[in-house]
Length: 239
Image (cartoon, rainbow, N blue to C red):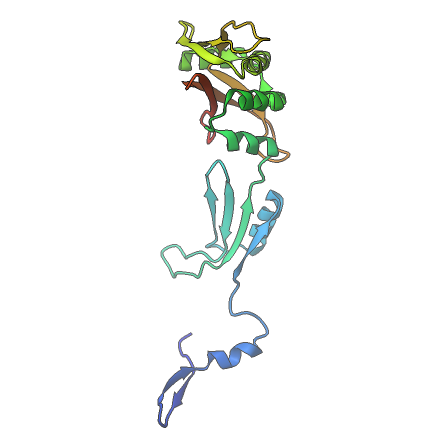
């Protein structure tokens, strides 16, 4: 406003006081819109944005692939004009599927032989055989072999057999596969080397009730103290 009503105080403690606090209790409406609405669906986010938007409203995207979000700032600053308060917002967090959250949580996490074997078998429904195009591309790019779900299940069962074994040798073959031999310390395993592929495919919906996408995952292992430590790395999940 061009003018602001004030109160001049005289006496032993003279001064100037604003009168706005005296009028606030009698407002029938807030002075401005403020607060953040949290939309539970993408459709609700769009509807709320359209309902409240002005010519200066802006939408901001958080591209963090582990927790992507959208936020509309309804009262955003004017372009080459006055600043605004930026206090009226609409927020939407993309709901990630439980399956995708499991894979994200385990990305890069080192596991012993037994834990990794159980993890693979529990998540076998999310594995996929590579297409011919994927097989050519990723085996060329990573100089390793790409696994089918059956090969990964076979690998996990081999790991379960050798869960109490010690590593005897760890080599890389010309094909790019890793090869591990176990020194048996208990009965029930034949001690034959396991061929370890370097990559496999996921066919999974990252978002709850969303469409499935195909995502390559790198399979890694490290010999450590007579055992093998396993982990995987999701390849370029932000793309």
